[in-house]
Length: 461
Ligand SMILES: Cc1ncc(COP(=O)(O)O)c(C=O)c1O
Image 1 (cartoon, rainbow, N blue to C red):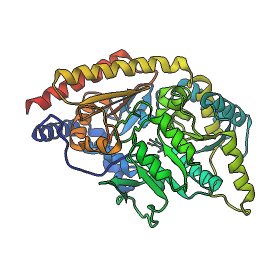
Image 2 (image 1 turned 90 degrees about the vertical axis):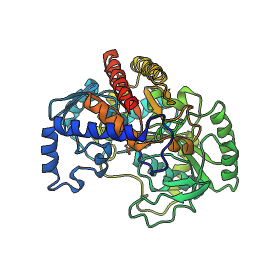
Image 3 (image 1 turned 60 degrees about the horizontal axis):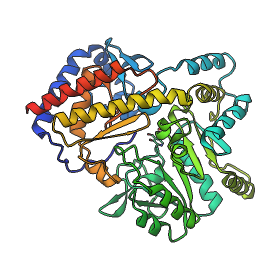
Image 4 (image 1 turned 90 degrees about the horizontal axis):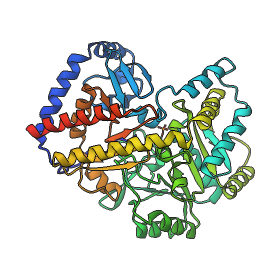
């Protein structure tokens, strides 16, 4: 997930007036049909700051927060009794469906046998071995969230290389890791002004270039002070940005030539297969980060290193004075999280689970393309693994700036709310739809029919 700064409205092919009118109608409809959510939201506002457990839960664009009753498989039921087909799936945390049976069973077993001890059990070795098999990296450690995993990896890699600088691609999101919140504005690096309470100047130690720009990458690494490039293999948080053919092959050669390490953040691209996108596309990273769906919805994450990097990281730890490394949290790798990861790895991170998800995502992408074409809209659709994204531009964007320029938050809100009011939930902040093993063809039809309805209404204005 990621929220981006406002900018000039792109040419989306629909009139701003009809977007505003649709949004107003859908806000009314939501307010009328969600009395119980309204009531619970009112009660929550008494003691929850912002009225929600996490302030960005207000950013869905609903007049008041939707309150969940329960969720199972591809469906989510709200407290007013509406059943929604869920294509957000907790922004990937529930990629294997809500409460997948193997994970629910493992949690139930483990819940009766201890939740957290700050000690290892057999699951640790099994989970690490399965991660090594899936992702092709031999050495693993854990975290509670992908954010923390990225934060810890940065520490290890800065320590292992003795280099201070991080390189990221413009428009990236890797969780709330402060270091990555540097944007390129008109070609200049700018620390994201929305970051609260940030007292450190990030610019000296974070370098940012556009995705797919090999010359800029080469120039940014040339000083020899960059510890690592932290990247998603496909950008997924500013809409979707695909690597151009040959990009990663050439980028890897440049990165290696400058003695920099490559970290692949597969938190979202895990939907490409049991070993993530990098494994499926021959990208050889020095480190891999996996989070969100890795525990089937339980908070946990993992990061893996090559043998060489693991040796360098361990040497750095041995050489450091005794004391806190700055890496880890008390409940990290707790017994419940390990049980959840084991169940996910053993029973869900398997090719036969992914194959139908990919087929459904491809069908959804085809359906959306046909729909946009029929409505004469210059919107593109990109599908990677089980993720499908539509963007308000005719061609898939080639970098973060182009992807950001194609965003239209008001149009997104209007569409998302229209869909929600018709029983379909998609991811806020951009237009991502994720398919899980429980998603049916009927669910796809429901989404496509609802979208068709929204586009007809937008065309009216
Ligand atoms: C690529 C990527 N990495 C890391 C994260 C952080 O995950 P979490 O919020 O679970 O820490 C996200 C969240 O959206 C992400 O998209």
